[in-house]
Image (cartoon, rainbow, N blue to C red; front, side, top):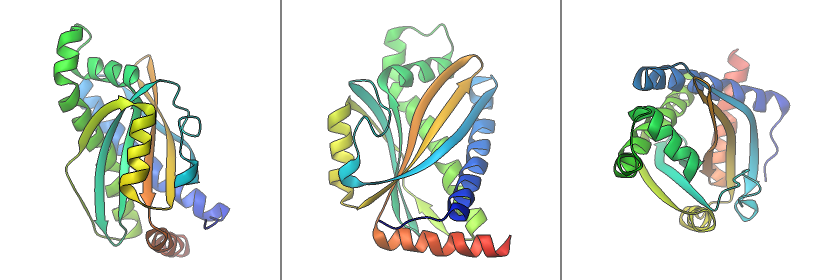
Length: 203
């Protein structure tokens, strides 16, 4: 696996922090509350290393919002939350008075909307800051056992490297932790490094 320098990791963190700021602003309008998103750290894993422990997922079931983006860099991008935290987020988006039945009915739609906001904010930040063109597909949300979701992610992607951003999301006084994961081929990872280095040189 390719090693990133400290400067390259710092530049990546900068890009995603800008994307997180954009997403937080959009989410604040939806839930009518102050939303803060942070990207505390960036990690890289081989696909064979991906498991619940590596991603700090402590629940037996998780929800995953997935999108594919292509262009100068191609990758599969996913937003992962435990099922309990996903439902809490849906409750905040719909209003705290929502019943369990209503949450279940609108979970798919709400999580796709949430994922679309966060994923596109990060992807647009990558495109804007690195000066590349990226196209995205519509988000798809699924919820299942943690083991099954993670095995499908690795199997479907067939890619050797996963870039994982551990996200803390705060809606007023409620905290939710999730992961934003990018699965890249070796070619796309090398291309990402090229654009990151150009960005660093232009700073």
